[in-house]
Image (cartoon, rainbow, N blue to C red; front, side, top):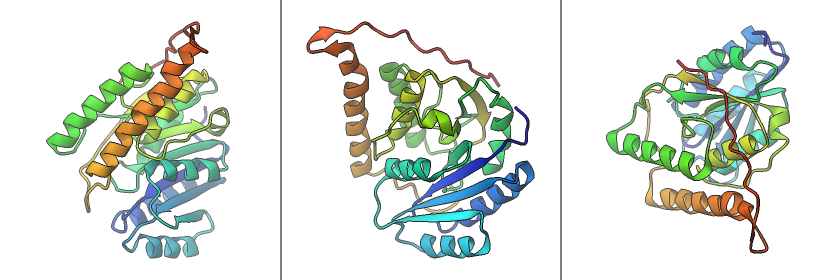
Length: 257
């Protein structure tokens, strides 16, 4: 694929990211302008209680390429992603988090791998820059996700993805928690999508604290994780109590570092 794709949507979910979201949006605009004339940046403000909303509204006033969607209250990470996917209108859709732990400019590393036969380019963290608790829990989560769902990526927890819009139109998403990443990758793989992977940098959170690692949010994610597993994996093998023929495991091509 040429480095000047037809059109790109970049969207960023944000929750209490007043200190980081402006820089990310500005960097995304500069990068996209160098790649294509048909682009948009969408930010999903998931009911932030800080000044994120006002920061975003000021950004939108300064550029016709920026769209802001405000959730009236905090609906969860999965809900923010679903809003982003449903509102992104370009051929290629890229998303990453609004907290500044990824470098949005590294989207340029993903684009060369989006060849005609590829549907998804998934980043994976070269080295996770989090405290020991988050690093260990993240590794366990990735291992369980790959084992339970037979995922074709090494780092489902890396929210740095480039996806063809037509691939997203083949699936539906329902999760409202962080389990949506597992749902997204599993359903895209089950739909026959071809994956590539590329290493990306991960940075310490520059401001604030993660809103995910609270007992309530962790419990919600765990519950959705196993409900999703039961619905899309276990139940897929049975119809009215009779075993259903197992589908062959999807094997994705992986780009080694």
